[in-house]
Amino acid sequence: MVEQKLQDTQTRALEEITRSDSLEELNEIRIRFLGKKGELTGVLRGMAAFSPEERPRIGQIANRVREKIEEKLDDRMAQLKEQVRKRKLEAETLDITLPGTVFGPGRLHPLTAVTRQIEDIFLGLGFSIAEGPEVETDYYNFEALNLPKDHPARDMQDTFFITPETLLRTHTSPVQVRTMERTAPALPVKIIAPGKVYRRDDDATHSPMFHQIEGLALDRRITFADLRGVLQVFARQMFGEDTQTRFRPSYFPFTEPSAEVDISCVMCAGKGCRVCSHTGWLEILGCGMVHPRVLEMSGYSSEEVTGFAFGMGIERVTMLKYGIDDLRLLFDNDMRFLAQF
Ligand code: DAH
Image (cartoon, rainbow, N blue to C red; front, side):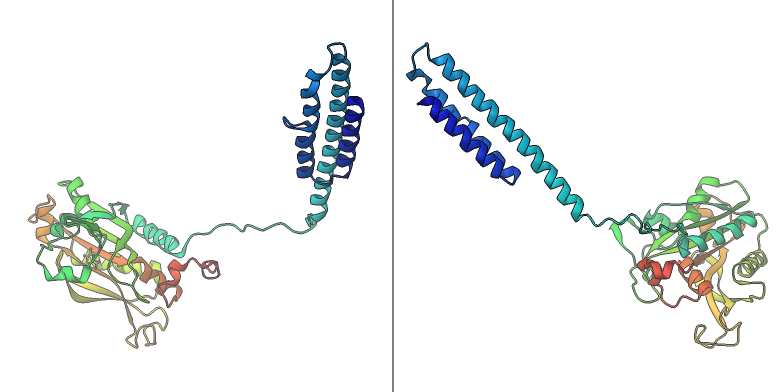
C-alpha cells in the first residue's frame, strides 16, 4: 500500500516536473512534494504506523523517491535556465559591426579660454595672479573700498547677503584690499585677480553670476600714463593691433581720478554699427588711480605710494571678441554653441 502510494507520488512528481516550463513553477513543485508540509514528508510522518521491522524498508523507498525527484528537479532547472539564457541571447540585437560612440576631445569653455588669454597678457607685463573669496565681508567688498554703509554708490551693486555683514562679492575689487593688507608696506605690487562675482541682475546682458578681472599696480611713482599704457597694450593684444582706446572721465569711490575705457568697435573698426550703437566705441572696463583713503586703510602711505586699478567684465570681453549677442548663451551649456570655440 505505502509502496504503491510512494510510487504514485514519484510518478506524478516526475510528470509535473517534465511538463513545467518556468523556474517559478518548478520551485512551486519542489515545495509541494518535498517541502516541510509536502506530500513525501507526509508519508514519512506516517511511519509511526508501521512495525519496527518494516520501517527501514519503507524509509529506504521513500529516500529513493526523494532522490529521484530531486535529481529530476535539478535536471529540469538546468534545462530551463539554459532556455532563459538562449532566449535572452536571441532577443539581444547587439551588432558588433556598428561603430562605437565617439567621445571627441574636450575643450575650454570660452570664458575660461578668454580668462587665460587675459591672464597671459598681464603675466607678460609682470603681473601675478591673486585670488579672494566669493563670500566676502561687507568690510572688504565696500567699506575698505571707500564705500561706507550709507554710500549711494552701493545701490548700483545690490547683491545676495548671507548675513548683514557677509555677502556674495559684487566685484573683484576686494582682492585689491586683501592683497594690500598682505603685502604692505612692500613695493611694487602688480596683481590681477580673476573670479566670479554676483549681483541682483538678470537679462540678456546681465547674469546674477558673472566674471571679472581686477588689476592693481602700486609703486612709488606710478602715474595715469602707466595705466593708459598698460591698458593700451592689453587692448591691442586682446583685440588686435589696430585697436584704439579712449578714456572717459567717470566715478568710482575707490579711485580718483576715475575713468571708463572704450575700445574702437571690433565689428566696424570705429565706423559705427549696431553693436556699438553707431558710436564706433565699446566700453570694456572701469579704472582709475587708487584713492588715497583706500591706500591708507590697507596699510600703504598715500604720501609715498601711488597706483592704478582697473576691473573688467570677462563675459563682456568674450562677447566682443567672438561677436556673441546674448550673454545667456555662455551659461546654457549647449554643445552646438560651445563646440564653435
Ligand atoms: N569694481 C568696479 C565694478 O565692478 C570696476 C572697477 C572700476 C574696478 C574701477 C576698479 C577700478 O579696480 O579702479 O563696477
